[in-house]
Amino acid sequence: MLLLADKPLRSGCLVIGVCAVVLASCLWSCREEKSPPANERRVVVVVSGDTAGWIIPCGCTTHQSGGLLRRGTYVEKQREEADVILLDAGGAPGGTSPYQRLKFEAILEGERLMGLAAHNIGGPEVALGLANLQEASRKTGARLISANLRDSVGRPVFDGWTIIETAGRRLAVIGVISPRYAAGDVRIEDPKAAVLASLQQLEGRHDGVVVMAYLPEDELQRLATELPEVDAVIGGPTGQPIAPRAVGPTVLAAATNKGKFLVQLEFAAAGNAGPPTGQVVELTGDWPDDRGQLANLRRYLEELNRRSFEPHQTDLVPSAPPDVPPGYRVAGSATCRECHERDNELWDASRHAKAWEDLKAMERHVDPYCQQCHTTGYGLPGGFVTVAKSPDRLGVGCEACHGPSQVHVEEPERRTPFDAKDQCTRCHDQENSPAFGYERYWEKIKHGETKGTQPDRLGPRPSGTETQP
Image 1: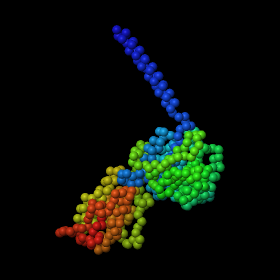
Image 2: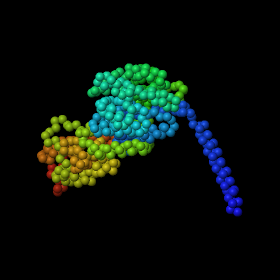
Image 3: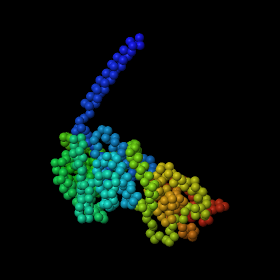
Image 4: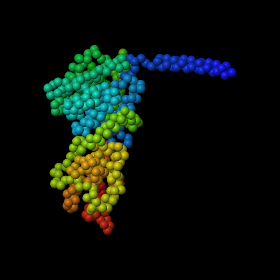
């Protein structure tokens, strides 16, 4: 009975198995019929520019745009439906200090992880110096290009162009920079002449040309007008992004403004005529963080923690006011407490006093850019240096607003050096505190109006200065 009952069961399994194979074969066949041949796939060029050192969005509030983490997600999303060529128009560094050089390398590494095809050299890159550029390219493997950049004796430093073959197309990418950015050991030749010379070398080897041009807007538009031979000219430092538009037969566009925007161009499938079409894309919070870019960010933060940059290594030290008096030095909030006890009690309960803890909660306390506004006297005499060297300068203390007050401590009749009200927007700017309004924020930290049996030694401030935070 068991053997007889087993036969139809096995037969049923066999029938089901055969049906499954047939169905899978049909589905795979249908998928193959619907998938376009490689040479008919869409080719999308995604261009970033003017990242200006911003690995994450440029600000610590919500609703900020930009950042490599979102850029990575956007690029991967486009790859689901098209062959993507990722380029950068230049302007990635935020300065020239050791801190900024490390950040530039982290940006190049992030771009490499996204599959960067070429990074054009812009003005901020030139400012780093050729040796630092070559070292960053070597360490990260990112491909830097520039057709008109020369060393001090006129020799090319990097490749002027590259050819990317994908979806049956051969797209040539040429990089140029404005001569106005020449500095140090760098010479810069005429961009138009450099593009035309590159096109002669590339003749017969491509079916499309994109020029990455780190040029101010007037030079960028003129170059696009003078190069009908190319499909697109994409810049550079134009202040605000330029949506793709036709300038004769050439498409002009710009990706700029701290990496908040991308330019996307779509080329017709191989063999089809017509100029590329495109759009500007804003990297808002709608785009989640890419895992690979998160890992890159963590490595960068770990290196910041290891190296613990001091202010003089960061390009972030504020300029000293003119005619700095003798004794211009941060004394520390503890010295203020001796005379301004009630004001310090109010400060103890404020968010300013907890600013360092807030920064640690965001895991950005190792970043000098963030330390500027979450410590007291960053880079000033007697002010914050590093956590190890100046642990009593953590948080936004009295002198963050009133200025280095050693002279006031020694001679109380001499006022503190800063008009505190003028210091608010140094940190409460549009990027970091877009909802800032002085009158409303002052109510959160209101002080300097001490009265009663134990007033501050100097008594209440004169009328007109009582609302200084």
